[in-house]
Image 1 (cartoon, rainbow over the protein chains, first blue to last red):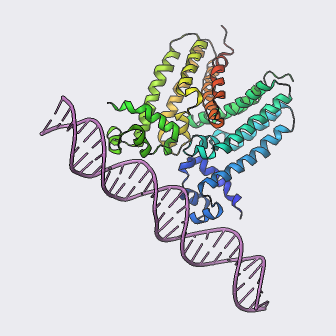
Image 2: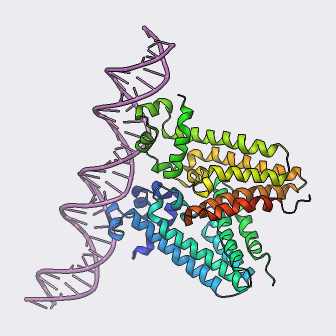
Image 3: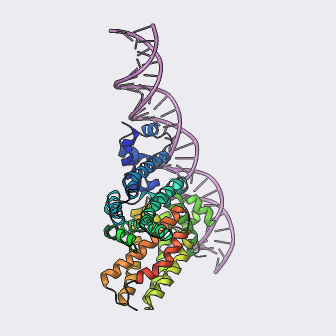
Amino acid sequence: MPKDTYIPCLLNLFRQYGYDGATLSRISEATGLGRASLYHHFPGGKDEMVEAVLDYLEGWLDRNVLQMLRSSGEPLTCFQVMCDRMYEVYEGGQQPCLFAILLLGSARDVFHTQVSEILRDWIAAIAAVLEEAGMDANLAQQRGEDGVIAIQGALILSQGLQDSAPFQRVVKQLPQQLCTGLLS
Amino acid sequence: MPKDTYIPCLLNLFRQYGYDGATLSRISEATGLGRASLYHHFPGGKDEMVEAVLDYLEGWLDRNVLQMLRSSGEPLTCFQVMCDRMYEVYEGGQQPCLFAILLLGSARDVFHTQVSEILRDWIAAIAAVLEEAGMDANLAQQRGEDGVIAIQGALILSQGLQDSAPFQRVVKQLPQQLCTGLLS
DNA sequence: TAATTTATACCGAACGAACGGTACACTGTC
DNA sequence: GACAGTGTACCGTTCGTTCGGTATAAATTA
Protein backbone atom coordinates (compact mmCIF):
# COMPACT_ATOMS: atom_id res chain seq x y z
CA MET A 1 0.00 0.00 0.00
CA PRO A 2 1.53 3.28 -1.11
CA LYS A 3 1.98 6.22 1.17
CA ASP A 4 -0.77 8.14 -0.62
CA THR A 5 -3.18 5.95 1.30
CA TYR A 6 -2.53 7.80 4.51
CA ILE A 7 -2.73 11.32 3.13
CA PRO A 8 -6.46 11.91 3.53
CA CYS A 9 -6.10 10.67 7.08
CA LEU A 10 -3.21 13.06 7.67
CA LEU A 11 -5.19 15.92 6.17
CA ASN A 12 -8.01 15.33 8.61
CA LEU A 13 -5.60 15.15 11.52
CA PHE A 14 -3.89 18.43 10.70
CA ARG A 15 -7.22 20.12 10.14
CA GLN A 16 -8.65 18.79 13.38
CA TYR A 17 -5.71 19.42 15.69
CA GLY A 18 -3.53 21.96 13.89
CA TYR A 19 0.12 21.47 13.07
CA ASP A 20 1.35 21.36 16.64
CA GLY A 21 -1.65 19.51 17.99
CA ALA A 22 -1.26 16.71 15.49
CA THR A 23 1.43 14.90 17.46
CA LEU A 24 3.17 11.78 16.24
CA SER A 25 1.33 9.79 18.87
CA ARG A 26 -1.99 10.91 17.46
CA ILE A 27 -0.81 10.39 13.89
CA SER A 28 0.41 6.93 14.79
CA GLU A 29 -2.89 6.10 16.42
CA ALA A 30 -5.02 7.48 13.59
CA THR A 31 -3.07 5.84 10.76
CA GLY A 32 -2.53 2.59 12.62
CA LEU A 33 1.17 2.88 11.81
CA GLY A 34 3.90 2.75 14.43
CA ARG A 35 6.11 5.76 14.90
CA ALA A 36 9.00 4.10 13.11
CA SER A 37 6.79 3.09 10.21
CA LEU A 38 5.75 6.69 9.73
CA TYR A 39 9.40 7.57 9.29
CA HIS A 40 9.73 4.81 6.74
CA HIS A 41 7.11 6.46 4.54
CA PHE A 42 8.01 10.02 5.41
CA PRO A 43 11.75 10.16 6.17
CA GLY A 44 11.49 13.91 6.59
CA GLY A 45 9.17 13.49 9.55
CA LYS A 46 6.18 15.64 10.29
CA ASP A 47 7.19 18.38 7.88
CA GLU A 48 7.31 15.91 5.01
CA MET A 49 3.86 14.67 5.97
CA VAL A 50 2.50 18.20 5.77
CA GLU A 51 4.24 18.76 2.46
CA ALA A 52 2.74 15.56 1.09
CA VAL A 53 -0.69 16.74 2.15
CA LEU A 54 -0.07 20.13 0.53
CA ASP A 55 1.00 18.41 -2.68
CA TYR A 56 -2.16 16.37 -2.52
CA LEU A 57 -4.31 19.46 -2.01
CA GLU A 58 -2.52 21.31 -4.79
CA GLY A 59 -3.28 18.43 -7.13
CA TRP A 60 -6.85 18.23 -5.95
CA LEU A 61 -7.39 21.95 -6.50
CA ASP A 62 -5.88 21.78 -9.96
CA ARG A 63 -7.90 18.74 -11.04
CA ASN A 64 -11.22 19.74 -9.51
CA VAL A 65 -11.25 23.53 -9.67
CA LEU A 66 -8.56 25.21 -11.74
CA GLN A 67 -8.93 22.97 -14.80
CA MET A 68 -12.67 23.46 -14.66
CA LEU A 69 -12.23 27.24 -14.46
CA ARG A 70 -9.92 27.09 -17.47
CA SER A 71 -12.48 25.19 -19.50
CA SER A 72 -14.07 28.49 -20.54
CA GLY A 73 -17.70 27.90 -19.67
CA GLU A 74 -20.21 30.46 -18.47
CA PRO A 75 -18.54 32.39 -15.59
CA LEU A 76 -21.52 32.10 -13.28
CA THR A 77 -21.73 28.35 -13.84
CA CYS A 78 -17.97 27.96 -13.36
CA PHE A 79 -18.08 29.73 -10.02
CA GLN A 80 -21.08 27.74 -8.92
CA VAL A 81 -19.18 24.54 -9.58
CA MET A 82 -16.16 25.97 -7.77
CA CYS A 83 -18.29 26.78 -4.75
CA ASP A 84 -19.82 23.32 -4.82
CA ARG A 85 -16.33 21.86 -4.66
CA MET A 86 -15.47 24.16 -1.75
CA TYR A 87 -18.60 23.02 0.02
CA GLU A 88 -17.36 19.47 -0.32
CA VAL A 89 -13.76 19.85 0.88
CA TYR A 90 -14.74 21.98 3.82
CA GLU A 91 -17.69 19.73 4.58
CA GLY A 92 -20.20 22.53 4.50
CA GLY A 93 -18.02 24.76 6.62
CA GLN A 94 -17.42 22.36 9.47
CA GLN A 95 -13.80 21.74 8.53
CA PRO A 96 -11.20 24.49 8.73
CA CYS A 97 -8.76 25.25 5.93
CA LEU A 98 -5.32 23.69 6.21
CA PHE A 99 -3.77 26.68 4.46
CA ALA A 100 -5.01 29.04 7.15
CA ILE A 101 -3.96 26.62 9.86
CA LEU A 102 -0.42 26.47 8.54
CA LEU A 103 -0.31 30.22 7.91
CA LEU A 104 -1.25 30.96 11.51
CA GLY A 105 0.56 28.07 13.22
CA SER A 106 4.01 27.98 14.70
CA ALA A 107 5.62 26.57 11.56
CA ARG A 108 4.28 29.20 9.20
CA ASP A 109 7.68 29.97 7.70
CA VAL A 110 8.27 26.37 6.66
CA PHE A 111 5.19 26.07 4.47
CA HIS A 112 4.59 29.63 3.47
CA THR A 113 6.11 29.35 0.00
CA GLN A 114 3.96 26.45 -1.11
CA VAL A 115 0.77 27.87 0.40
CA SER A 116 1.24 31.28 -1.16
CA GLU A 117 1.80 29.65 -4.54
CA ILE A 118 -1.46 27.75 -4.28
CA LEU A 119 -3.36 30.87 -3.26
CA ARG A 120 -1.87 32.84 -6.14
CA ASP A 121 -2.83 30.18 -8.68
CA TRP A 122 -6.34 30.04 -7.35
CA ILE A 123 -6.80 33.81 -7.52
CA ALA A 124 -5.32 33.94 -11.01
CA ALA A 125 -7.69 31.25 -12.24
CA ILE A 126 -10.74 33.15 -11.00
CA ALA A 127 -9.44 36.39 -12.48
CA ALA A 128 -8.80 34.70 -15.84
CA VAL A 129 -12.42 33.60 -16.10
CA LEU A 130 -13.66 37.13 -15.50
CA GLU A 131 -11.12 38.71 -17.79
CA GLU A 132 -12.07 36.25 -20.51
CA ALA A 133 -15.67 37.41 -20.05
CA GLY A 134 -14.65 41.00 -20.66
CA MET A 135 -13.92 42.32 -17.21
CA ASP A 136 -11.15 44.83 -16.64
CA ALA A 137 -7.95 43.06 -15.64
CA ASN A 138 -7.44 44.95 -12.39
CA LEU A 139 -11.02 44.46 -11.28
CA ALA A 140 -10.84 40.78 -12.22
CA GLN A 141 -7.75 40.37 -10.06
CA GLN A 142 -9.56 42.07 -7.18
CA ARG A 143 -12.52 39.76 -7.63
CA GLY A 144 -10.23 36.76 -7.53
CA GLU A 145 -8.87 37.97 -4.24
CA ASP A 146 -12.39 38.68 -3.01
CA GLY A 147 -13.39 35.11 -3.75
CA VAL A 148 -10.57 33.65 -1.68
CA ILE A 149 -11.14 36.24 1.03
CA ALA A 150 -14.84 35.41 1.27
CA ILE A 151 -14.23 31.68 1.58
CA GLN A 152 -11.37 31.97 4.05
CA GLY A 153 -13.21 34.53 6.13
CA ALA A 154 -16.40 32.52 6.13
CA LEU A 155 -14.49 29.44 7.28
CA ILE A 156 -12.98 31.39 10.16
CA LEU A 157 -16.34 32.78 11.19
CA SER A 158 -18.13 29.45 10.93
CA GLN A 159 -15.35 27.93 12.99
CA GLY A 160 -15.62 30.73 15.52
CA LEU A 161 -19.39 30.58 15.88
CA GLN A 162 -19.45 26.80 15.53
CA ASP A 163 -22.20 27.37 13.03
CA SER A 164 -21.79 26.44 9.39
CA ALA A 165 -24.57 28.81 8.27
CA PRO A 166 -22.27 31.76 7.42
CA PHE A 167 -20.07 29.59 5.22
CA GLN A 168 -23.02 28.03 3.47
CA ARG A 169 -24.53 31.42 2.78
CA VAL A 170 -21.27 32.72 1.40
CA VAL A 171 -20.71 29.86 -1.04
CA LYS A 172 -24.29 30.33 -2.19
CA GLN A 173 -23.98 34.07 -2.81
CA LEU A 174 -20.39 34.17 -4.01
CA PRO A 175 -20.87 33.17 -7.67
CA GLN A 176 -23.30 36.03 -8.26
CA GLN A 177 -21.08 38.50 -6.41
CA LEU A 178 -18.05 37.58 -8.47
CA CYS A 179 -20.02 38.12 -11.68
CA THR A 180 -21.63 41.47 -10.86
CA GLY A 181 -20.81 44.09 -13.45
CA LEU A 182 -20.46 41.45 -16.14
CA LEU A 183 -22.59 41.84 -19.26
CA SER A 184 -23.88 38.43 -20.16
CA MET B 1 4.05 47.55 37.85
CA PRO B 2 0.73 45.87 37.21
CA LYS B 3 0.41 42.81 35.05
CA ASP B 4 -1.43 44.79 32.38
CA THR B 5 1.96 46.14 31.43
CA TYR B 6 2.96 42.88 29.81
CA ILE B 7 -0.24 42.22 27.93
CA PRO B 8 0.60 44.08 24.69
CA CYS B 9 3.87 42.19 24.66
CA LEU B 10 2.04 38.89 25.14
CA LEU B 11 -0.39 39.80 22.39
CA ASN B 12 2.46 40.34 19.98
CA LEU B 13 4.08 37.06 20.98
CA PHE B 14 0.94 35.00 20.45
CA ARG B 15 0.27 36.71 17.15
CA GLN B 16 3.83 36.20 15.97
CA TYR B 17 4.37 32.60 17.03
CA GLY B 18 0.88 31.18 17.60
CA TYR B 19 -0.28 29.57 20.82
CA ASP B 20 2.09 26.62 20.71
CA GLY B 21 4.98 28.54 19.24
CA ALA B 22 4.88 31.10 22.03
CA THR B 23 6.78 28.99 24.52
CA LEU B 24 7.45 30.01 28.09
CA SER B 25 11.10 30.50 27.24
CA ARG B 26 10.20 32.96 24.51
CA ILE B 27 7.65 34.69 26.71
CA SER B 28 10.22 34.95 29.48
CA GLU B 29 12.76 36.39 27.09
CA ALA B 30 10.37 38.87 25.49
CA THR B 31 8.88 40.17 28.72
CA GLY B 32 12.16 40.15 30.57
CA LEU B 33 10.41 38.24 33.36
CA GLY B 34 11.71 34.98 34.78
CA ARG B 35 9.53 31.92 34.82
CA ALA B 36 8.72 32.39 38.49
CA SER B 37 7.65 35.96 37.91
CA LEU B 38 5.41 34.94 35.06
CA TYR B 39 3.67 32.45 37.31
CA HIS B 40 3.43 35.07 40.01
CA HIS B 41 1.46 37.34 37.68
CA PHE B 42 -0.38 34.57 35.87
CA PRO B 43 -0.83 31.65 38.29
CA GLY B 44 -2.87 29.82 35.68
CA GLY B 45 0.10 29.67 33.36
CA LYS B 46 -0.02 30.10 29.63
CA ASP B 47 -3.77 29.71 29.39
CA GLU B 48 -4.30 32.54 31.85
CA MET B 49 -1.97 34.72 29.83
CA VAL B 50 -4.04 34.11 26.71
CA GLU B 51 -7.22 34.78 28.63
CA ALA B 52 -5.78 38.04 29.92
CA VAL B 53 -4.93 39.03 26.37
CA LEU B 54 -8.43 38.11 25.22
CA ASP B 55 -9.92 40.19 28.03
CA TYR B 56 -7.71 43.05 26.96
CA LEU B 57 -8.80 42.71 23.34
CA GLU B 58 -12.44 42.45 24.35
CA GLY B 59 -12.09 45.70 26.29
CA TRP B 60 -10.23 47.36 23.48
CA LEU B 61 -12.88 46.36 20.95
CA ASP B 62 -15.64 47.62 23.21
CA ARG B 63 -13.97 50.92 23.96
CA ASN B 64 -12.69 51.68 20.47
CA VAL B 65 -15.23 50.10 18.17
CA LEU B 66 -18.47 48.89 19.70
CA GLN B 67 -19.17 52.02 21.75
CA MET B 68 -18.45 54.15 18.72
CA LEU B 69 -20.85 52.04 16.65
CA ARG B 70 -23.49 52.44 19.32
CA SER B 71 -23.12 56.23 19.29
CA SER B 72 -25.62 56.42 16.41
CA GLY B 73 -23.70 58.47 13.89
CA GLU B 74 -23.88 58.21 10.13
CA PRO B 75 -23.44 54.47 9.26
CA LEU B 76 -20.85 55.10 6.57
CA THR B 77 -18.78 57.27 8.91
CA CYS B 78 -19.10 54.73 11.71
CA PHE B 79 -17.81 51.94 9.51
CA GLN B 80 -14.98 54.09 8.24
CA VAL B 81 -13.86 54.70 11.79
CA MET B 82 -14.23 51.00 12.54
CA CYS B 83 -12.06 50.13 9.56
CA ASP B 84 -9.47 52.71 10.62
CA ARG B 85 -9.29 51.01 14.00
CA MET B 86 -8.88 47.64 12.30
CA TYR B 87 -6.09 49.07 10.22
CA GLU B 88 -4.34 50.06 13.41
CA VAL B 89 -4.62 46.83 15.40
CA TYR B 90 -3.63 44.69 12.49
CA GLU B 91 -0.90 47.12 11.52
CA GLY B 92 -2.14 47.52 7.98
CA GLY B 93 -2.58 43.80 7.52
CA GLN B 94 0.87 42.74 8.58
CA GLN B 95 -0.30 41.26 11.87
CA PRO B 96 -2.56 38.22 11.98
CA CYS B 97 -5.67 38.05 14.13
CA LEU B 98 -5.32 36.36 17.51
CA PHE B 99 -8.89 35.09 17.33
CA ALA B 100 -8.16 33.19 14.14
CA ILE B 101 -4.90 31.90 15.57
CA LEU B 102 -6.64 30.52 18.62
CA LEU B 103 -9.53 29.16 16.58
CA LEU B 104 -7.19 27.19 14.34
CA GLY B 105 -4.55 26.25 16.91
CA SER B 106 -4.27 23.16 19.03
CA ALA B 107 -6.02 24.72 22.03
CA ARG B 108 -9.10 25.86 20.15
CA ASP B 109 -11.50 24.26 22.60
CA VAL B 110 -10.07 26.14 25.57
CA PHE B 111 -10.70 29.61 24.20
CA HIS B 112 -13.56 29.02 21.85
CA THR B 113 -16.28 30.31 24.19
CA GLN B 114 -14.67 33.69 24.75
CA VAL B 115 -13.70 34.16 21.10
CA SER B 116 -17.15 33.30 19.81
CA GLU B 117 -18.68 35.76 22.25
CA ILE B 118 -16.47 38.56 20.99
CA LEU B 119 -17.28 37.76 17.38
CA ARG B 120 -20.99 37.69 18.13
CA ASP B 121 -20.88 41.07 19.84
CA TRP B 122 -18.97 42.58 16.99
CA ILE B 123 -21.40 41.29 14.39
CA ALA B 124 -24.37 42.43 16.44
CA ALA B 125 -22.95 45.94 16.76
CA ILE B 126 -22.52 46.27 13.01
CA ALA B 127 -26.00 44.91 12.41
CA ALA B 128 -27.49 47.32 14.95
CA VAL B 129 -26.09 50.31 13.09
CA LEU B 130 -27.63 49.15 9.82
CA GLU B 131 -30.94 48.23 11.40
CA GLU B 132 -31.08 51.62 13.07
CA ALA B 133 -30.62 53.15 9.63
CA GLY B 134 -33.60 51.26 8.32
CA MET B 135 -32.15 48.05 6.96
CA ASP B 136 -34.04 44.79 7.26
CA ALA B 137 -32.95 42.90 10.35
CA ASN B 138 -31.94 39.72 8.54
CA LEU B 139 -29.95 41.57 5.92
CA ALA B 140 -28.30 43.69 8.61
CA GLN B 141 -27.22 40.52 10.44
CA GLN B 142 -25.79 39.16 7.18
CA ARG B 143 -23.91 42.39 6.60
CA GLY B 144 -22.48 42.17 10.09
CA GLU B 145 -21.21 38.71 9.30
CA ASP B 146 -19.91 39.92 5.95
CA GLY B 147 -17.89 42.62 7.66
CA VAL B 148 -16.14 40.17 9.96
CA ILE B 149 -15.71 37.70 7.11
CA ALA B 150 -14.09 40.31 4.89
CA ILE B 151 -11.62 41.39 7.53
CA GLN B 152 -10.72 37.90 8.67
CA GLY B 153 -10.43 36.65 5.11
CA ALA B 154 -8.33 39.61 4.06
CA LEU B 155 -5.99 39.04 6.98
CA ILE B 156 -5.53 35.41 5.99
CA LEU B 157 -4.86 36.33 2.39
CA SER B 158 -2.46 39.13 3.23
CA GLN B 159 -0.68 36.75 5.56
CA GLY B 160 -0.61 34.09 2.84
CA LEU B 161 0.70 36.36 0.11
CA GLN B 162 2.90 38.33 2.52
CA ASP B 163 1.39 41.39 0.94
CA SER B 164 -0.75 43.79 2.92
CA ALA B 165 -2.40 45.24 -0.20
CA PRO B 166 -5.48 42.96 -0.12
CA PHE B 167 -6.21 43.85 3.49
CA GLN B 168 -5.75 47.53 2.87
CA ARG B 169 -8.06 47.43 -0.12
CA VAL B 170 -10.70 45.59 1.85
CA VAL B 171 -10.76 48.02 4.77
CA LYS B 172 -11.01 50.83 2.26
CA GLN B 173 -13.95 49.35 0.37
CA LEU B 174 -15.77 47.72 3.26
CA PRO B 175 -17.64 50.76 4.67
CA GLN B 176 -19.34 51.40 1.32
CA GLN B 177 -20.13 47.71 0.82
CA LEU B 178 -21.77 47.44 4.22
CA CYS B 179 -23.96 50.45 3.46
CA THR B 180 -25.16 49.49 -0.03
CA GLY B 181 -28.90 49.38 -0.22
CA LEU B 182 -29.24 52.03 2.45
CA LEU B 183 -31.28 55.12 1.55
CA SER B 184 -29.56 58.35 2.52
C1' DT C 1 14.63 -26.68 -7.23
C1' DA C 2 16.73 -25.04 -3.05
C1' DA C 3 19.28 -21.58 -0.86
C1' DT C 4 20.25 -16.91 -0.38
C1' DT C 5 20.10 -12.18 -1.01
C1' DT C 6 17.44 -7.87 -1.48
C1' DA C 7 13.67 -4.77 -0.76
C1' DT C 8 9.66 -3.32 1.50
C1' DA C 9 6.87 -2.63 5.35
C1' DC C 10 6.61 -2.63 9.91
C1' DC C 11 7.46 -2.35 15.09
C1' DG C 12 8.77 -1.48 20.34
C1' DA C 13 11.94 0.75 22.91
C1' DA C 14 14.66 4.30 23.74
C1' DC C 15 16.91 8.91 22.74
C1' DG C 16 18.01 13.92 23.81
C1' DA C 17 15.70 18.10 23.95
C1' DA C 18 12.25 21.04 25.13
C1' DC C 19 7.93 21.56 27.04
C1' DG C 20 4.81 23.70 30.90
C1' DG C 21 5.06 24.13 35.57
C1' DT C 22 6.87 24.10 40.65
C1' DA C 23 9.78 24.64 45.06
C1' DC C 24 12.37 27.50 47.55
C1' DA C 25 15.38 30.77 49.04
C1' DC C 26 16.39 35.42 48.44
C1' DT C 27 15.60 40.35 47.61
C1' DG C 28 13.77 44.74 48.24
C1' DT C 29 9.91 47.83 50.15
C1' DC C 30 6.30 49.15 53.18
C1' DG D 1 7.78 41.26 60.13
C1' DA D 2 4.89 40.84 56.05
C1' DC D 3 4.73 40.28 51.36
C1' DA D 4 5.00 41.17 46.40
C1' DG D 5 8.49 40.13 43.13
C1' DT D 6 12.44 37.59 41.50
C1' DG D 7 16.45 34.01 40.14
C1' DT D 8 17.85 29.33 40.17
C1' DA D 9 17.43 24.86 40.02
C1' DC D 10 14.53 21.32 39.21
C1' DC D 11 10.21 18.35 38.39
C1' DG D 12 7.63 14.92 35.39
C1' DT D 13 5.89 14.68 30.79
C1' DT D 14 5.80 14.67 26.08
C1' DC D 15 7.76 16.09 22.00
C1' DG D 16 9.95 14.61 17.33
C1' DT D 17 13.22 11.46 16.10
C1' DT D 18 16.26 7.33 15.73
C1' DC D 19 17.91 2.64 16.66
C1' DG D 20 18.05 -2.23 16.19
C1' DG D 21 15.59 -5.70 14.59
C1' DT D 22 11.48 -8.76 12.59
C1' DA D 23 8.15 -10.62 8.96
C1' DT D 24 7.23 -11.32 4.29
C1' DA D 25 7.76 -11.88 -0.36
C1' DA D 26 10.04 -11.18 -4.63
C1' DA D 27 14.46 -11.58 -7.03
C1' DT D 28 18.79 -13.73 -7.57
C1' DT D 29 21.96 -17.28 -7.40
C1' DA D 30 23.79 -22.11 -7.01
